[in-house]
Amino acid sequence: MGKVHFSDLTIDLDLLNEYLIIEKIILFGNMKADARDIDLLIVSDDFQDMYAKKRKDFIYKGLTALKKIDVLCLSNRQYEKMVSVENEFNKNLFRKGVIVYEREN
Image (cartoon, rainbow, N blue to C red; front, side, top):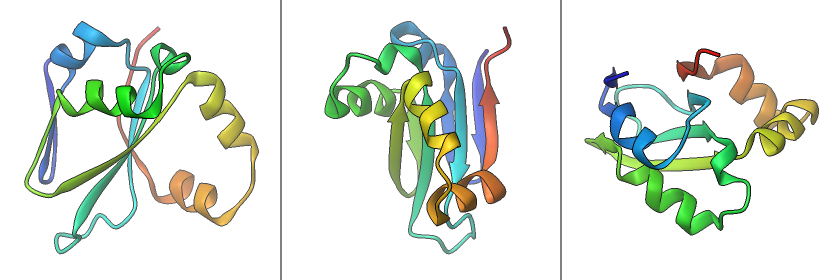
């Protein structure tokens, strides 16, 4: 798997997969060079019974960035529910977001 590099962000998939099975990572939000932070949506079924802080603790171990990183960590079920809800946040995320990693089945 290795590492995924995108702009000011490096994702160490090997390290993350020591703790979790990552299904998908989507980069979203302001992706311009002058953006203050990096927004990521990370999907893993391993998040199912995990509190939000613990989810983020695992994820931050495998992320390196020159900017602040904001992560939204969802289980597959939460992600599917999100996909089915139409609102401005979701429309923007799915229209403009960039899939930087997707697990092969």
